[in-house]
Image (cartoon, one colour):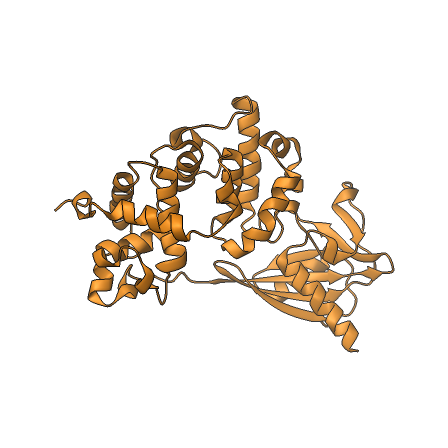
Length: 352
């Protein structure tokens, strides 16, 4: 039996019917504007809906169209992205906006194939935009769809398996054909996000459980097989603390590396605490070597330990003076780690 023959005839209709009756009321589902859908899809990459919800409309108020987004410096976009993480997405979105304006006359591409030419837009994102905004029969496969399909059809292989993903794209290509491809794709995403969850899936309310191999076996969490855990790297960051009545001295990070374009305490990185402290001492005047606060932070594949040290004087100005400033820090576009570090120091000071 071919993979396509695995698809029950009534599957598509059941998914659409359930989605239309029970879908979550999300702001990006009230538009067919391809730019707005593009923004939502980029924000939702590796980020939970609850994190994106309060930021989506705010971002679009600041950058209501592709021309506005293209017209501002990259640093401004990264600052507006603060708190959403994975800042490469923001930079690619900005580069994509410039491509649309400069190469396409400000008109968004209308097909998945053309959309894939935009920086940061892969096959999944292109399929989502093309199907939702333009009604193109473009498939998509993301983590939610991998999990749902693997369970539904009882397919072996871990979620990162190229062989498994190849089979899933074939199934998605077949299933998207027909009326309302955008709704169908969103129904697949909704299944994985709200019903066919990684743990404790709600099989009792699944509209297609009668066809589900994993449900029939009584072991839905068996699929897909777990992938090998990646080794987590350790990163140490040394922060410098200089505080006056004006505020706390902050610096803007470069556009390369972690947290591009965001603001933080003067910093240096290293593979050990001593290495990070030495690198910080090479560029600023430290006070006592004893740290005044320490915080921990987790990134996707890294465990970060940040230690804060007092500075004996204000850091020297650089030629690009705008890249350093005193500020009321918690109103600045800070990295999540910098915010943690500042709160930790302030808590220590209040506790004295």
